[in-house]
Image 1: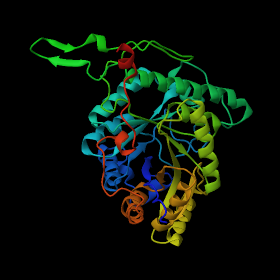
Image 2: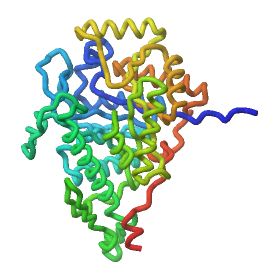
Image 3: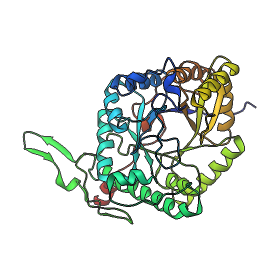
Image 4: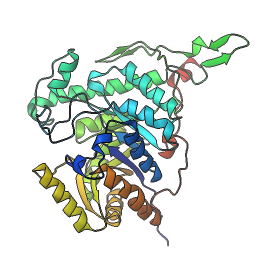
Length: 402
C-alpha cells in the first residue's frame, strides 16, 4: 500500500526592519538608508511574493525597539524607529497581486473601531488579502504615550507579579478582536444598493448596531466601512504559553508558536487544540504556524560563520524566543517536515538579514519544498483566506435579521 502524501505546507515571513538580527543593518545588502521608504518595503514583499508565500507579517510597536525587557534602552548601535505597519501594508498592497498582508496592531492602546476600519480598508485596497497580527504591550513607557492608564513595571511576562496584569491584557485583546470582528459584520454584504436611478445608495436596514459590551470595551457600531471583501480578514497572534494560547484558540485564524523541537511542537499543538475545543471552535480551521529565525547559506558552516560575525558586531550572542536555524535550504526543509509531523500546518520564518535570507527563502527553500511536493507551484486563490483554505464566513447579523 502507498502511504498518503503529506499535505502542502503554508509559509509566511515576518518582516522587521533590516532583519531579526540586531546588527543586520550593518550588512552590505541591508539598505539601512532606504529603511523608511515605501520602495524598501515594496521590494521585500515583492521578493516574498516571488516565492509564492501565503503572507507577510510586518512588525510594529508603540515605543522604540529595545534590547531590554519591557523598557527602553539607550543603545545607538541598533535600528530604532518604525513606519506604521498598517500604512506600509496599504502602500504595498496595490503593487502586489497575490500575497497576503498582515500588519501588527497593538490592542492595548488602540480602539477596536479604528483597527476594524483600518484593516477593512486594507482588505479593499488589496482586494481581499488583508489580515492583522494582534499584540499586547506591558511596557510602562508606551502606556505613558497615551495617558489613559498606568502599567506597572514587570520583570517577565510569566513572573508572579505579572501574571494577573498580563492575563488582563490578553483578556482585553480578546475583547478587542471580538469587537473588531463584529464591526466587520455590521454591514451586510448587500447593504450598498448604489442605484442612481432611484437615488438609493444604501439599505439602512442592513447596517447593524453591534452593541458590544465587554469587560474592557463598549462599542455601539455600526462601522463606517462596508463589510470587507473577505468578510472577515485574517486574525493572527503570537503565543508562547497558556494565556495567549487561549487568545489564539478563541479569536485567531492563525497562531504563531515557538517550539524548539518536535516533542515541544506536539505538546503545544495538543494544548492549543484542547483550548480550541474548550472555546467551542473544534469544527473550525485554526492554523498553527511554527516560528523560526533563519540564517540560510550554501553550507551550514557559511551560515554559522555569518551568524558569528553578526554576533561579534553586536558584542553578544543573538538569542530569540523562537528556534534559530543555521544551515542550508535543504536542511531547513528537512526540519520543517519534521516539525510538521507534530501537527504544525505552516511556518512563519524570520529572516535574520532581510536582504540575504528572504531571497534564500523564496529562491532556495521554496523550490526545495516544491521538489518534495510540500509547497504550491502557483497561487491557487485570489484571497488570503482562500490561500489558507478558510471559507468566507457568513455574516452573523444577516442571519439574525433574516
